[in-house]
Length: 145
Image 1 (tube, one colour):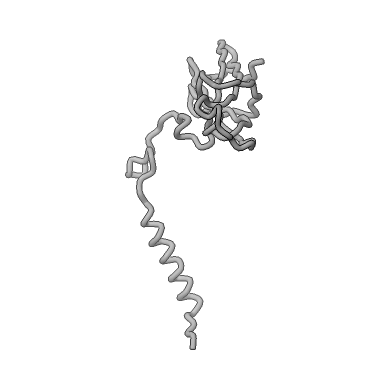
Image 2 (cartoon, helix red, strand yellow; image 1 turned 90 degrees about the horizontal axis):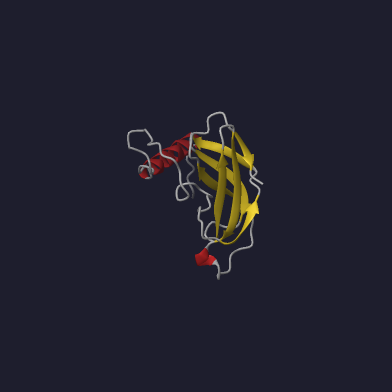
């Protein structure tokens, strides 16, 4: 014969188990000083999920239009493009800066180490990080044609 626990007791046990398991995985995250503060640093391809590696040795790079951008900090911009997986493809940004505008063109191509490998034929939303020579300030960000 099965014995049933009262619903309230079951709920308390379930919440207690979730809290206990949550505490087990409370190791500090990268950049976390352990005291609740997070160290601030400009992201790079290794720390930004979905980021393509920025390289100047890509195989058969093609210009792709970026769809949107955001400022990561005063000198780092993140552009969103459609590309293949980051383990097969990389990005090569070209930047022209003036007093009034920042013009950016992004080329995407195969990584040399993946040039002879089969890569999945999938289109992913990917990030490309671009470092500016001077702070963005009030300058406009535009496609470079």
